[in-house]
Length: 115
View 1: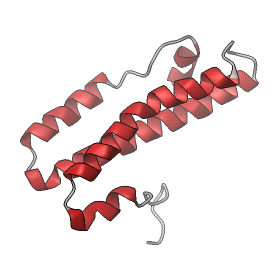
View 2: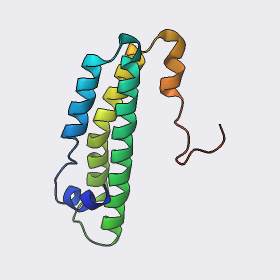
View 3: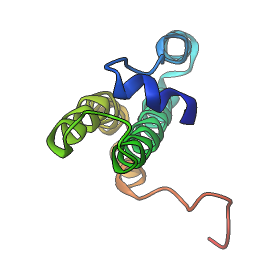
View 4: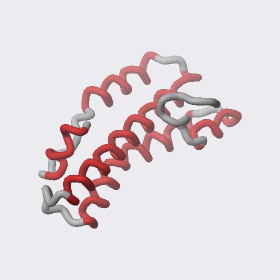
């Protein structure tokens, strides 16, 4: 991901095609009860990509390495988050009502830790 931030600064978008295709295939073969979980995992992936690229772009901008303004960086981040928001919405609608709280609960911190 870090290597892609320079490309984003030049107007390119992250290459998530294979990841999205794999998740789409998973939706076709997974049991109905777990469809929401695939959408949830996609949302998490898309979130992490958008966050990492936003941080990288901010660092590049601070170092004077991109002509993008702060407003343009926000616009790029929001464009990247569209996929995440869509996946969260699909997870919430596909999830059984008694498990919907899991979609909106923040994920555990990276590296595990006490639960």
